[in-house]
Image (cartoon, rainbow, N blue to C red):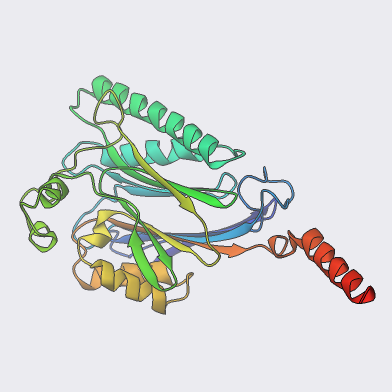
Length: 316
C-alpha cells in the first residue's frame, strides 16, 4: 500500500490531505480534512461579530468502489469562501472524470462573498462557465456528452444555501434528525414523484442511473437551490449516489449520529464497501459550531440590561 500525506497551514486554515491506493492499483481512497476558524464571509482576515458566527470543520473521502477501475467522482473544500461540493461524472458519458474535475475546479475559484445571495450568484456563475467549458470540450473531442452532477453547500453568516443538479445529495443532521435538502434530478425520482413507483421500487428500476440534469449536459444549465438558517452543531453531509445506492437514509443517519464527525466519512465508505460498492462513492461531512466571538456578540446588550437592573435596585 502506498500512502502519501501532505500537511499545510496557511492563514489559519489547517489542511491535511492523504491519498492511499491498494497495492494492486484497482481500489483507492482519497481523504481530506480542513478546519476553518474564520467564518466564511470574513474575507479570510479576522472574525467580526456580524460575519463570523460559526466556525467550520470538514472531512472528505472518495473511493473508486469495488467494481469500477476509474474514479469519476471529485470533491472540493473551499473553506475560505464557505463552499463545499461533490461532483460525479455522469455514468455512460465519456470523460466523466474530466467533467467532475472541471466542476470542482470552477467552484474552487469562487472567492469570499459578503452574504449568501452573492455567494450563490458567484457559484452559479462559475458553474455556468464549467458548463460552457464541458460543452466545448465535448464538441472538440467529438463526444455527445461530457457531464457531471454537482451538489454544493454554501455558508455565509447565519445562513446556508444548497445548489445542485443531478442525483448527488446533501443532507442536514440537526438534533439527531437527518433531513434530505436536495431532491434528485433523475428519471426514477420523477416516476416516484408522480406516484408511479414507490421509493423502494425505484432502487432497482432499470432507469435508476438516468439523470435529468447535469453540468455539461445542455446549453442552458438548470440548477435547483434552497436556502436556510444555520444552527449551532448542524452537520451537513454531501455525497454521490455511490453511497445512497447501497445505504438507506436511516442507515446513513445512524452512522452520523453514532460516529465522531472526523470518523464519519470513513465509516460511511466502509459501509458502502461492505455491500459491494458497485459505483464510485464520495462523502464530505461539514460541521458548524458557534465561534467564541459569537458567544459575546450581544455583550453590549447584556451590560445594558445589567446596568438597568442595578439602577432599579438602587432606587428602591
